[in-house]
Length: 338
Image 1 (cartoon, rainbow, N blue to C red):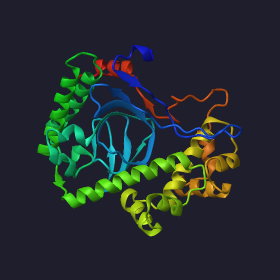
Image 2 (tube, rainbow, N blue to C red):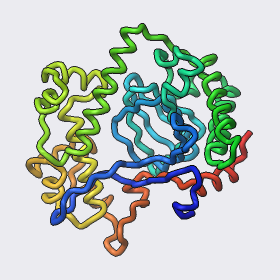
Image 3 (cartoon, rainbow, N blue to C red):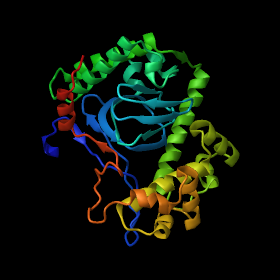
């Protein structure tokens, strides 16, 4: 399907992580942008083939159904092994990391802003759900009903008909009815809610800055000054929100960028280290050992692509790929929705 053929959807998908090309300027791009719907501005749905998503957070509440494959989910409170059929729930502002086990995990994702539900249930802004993998807290029939509502919501979301937005909203309402009636949650006080919202917005700004400047010298003191905070407070906030020290998070960003660059080109380890922000190649080596338990050369023996085959943005070893609307429709047609 050509871009011009998409009536109410705009698919702006770019995949992978950031790269630096040495004789050209650094070009940064998002891991992915989403299929958006012109009539449902506060609701976004898409299917993604996920390899790895580093620790991050959203301003929206997020639900994911694992359609195929499996992934390890690390959150602010717990780790979850999610296989096919699992439904994952992430509160707005809740940090989480996803890593596929072997082949890419295919996830149906629904992101809903607070304003979408606040029109019907204003207290939703203050609710924090107490479960990430919903198979642990929902009866099987309720989990099946939740998956069904997600699939039907996507089917309506992809239609270009007058009633489609209403059909989608009906399924989203069903999703929230299940969550609020069957899933444990607590209601924050006004003070707690304001503090968590402020911290989440601050972390969102900081992470965006790091994701676009990781190849440059970045210091905690610089970030603290930008945010009007002390270094001590920001260091504590980073650990509190992401459960990882600032420098470790920055090193992981740089490591992921180096891994992608090494996979997609014949770049040397030294050049990859400097290109991705490491001040010395030995720090790239240490990062490989710390995070992967092997040296860069050992990792390359397993992951260097065939030099005769040009790397693709859709290579599942190096990218996350958003399915197109046509692919989503074909997948839904092939599924037996109960």
